[in-house]
Image (tube, rainbow, N blue to C red; front, side, top):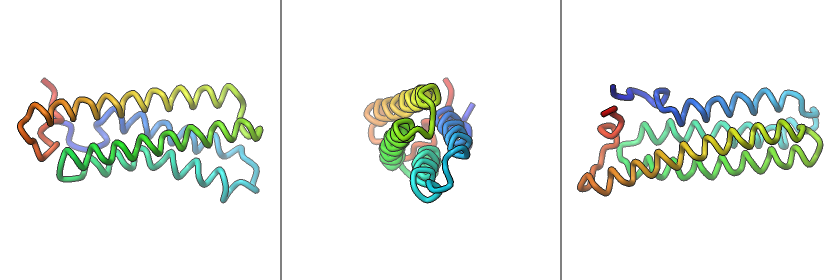
Length: 137
């Protein structure tokens, strides 16, 4: 079965769930943080699945890998803002731990996809289009 869109990628699905979790979590933040931490957290968390989607739509495997690297950076930014939110008393330690675990899971998925793409790229003799890589065997 071939993945026809970014929505079929497990990494995108889990990153999207993380974004939804962050949006729900930030509804409880003080109004004074609307343009501060709330904005930063929402932007960085939504950038993770957005970069996966963008990479899927790019023409080459190398471009997809670059977008996955950017997604990984945005994921770490999200993790930092959740830690900051905990330290400022905006989220509980339990919320911080839960989101942190979700970040770990998404990070593992990003790393796994990136490693798989690099292996296939290396063994494929210069595969340029990644679309053929998204098939089940």
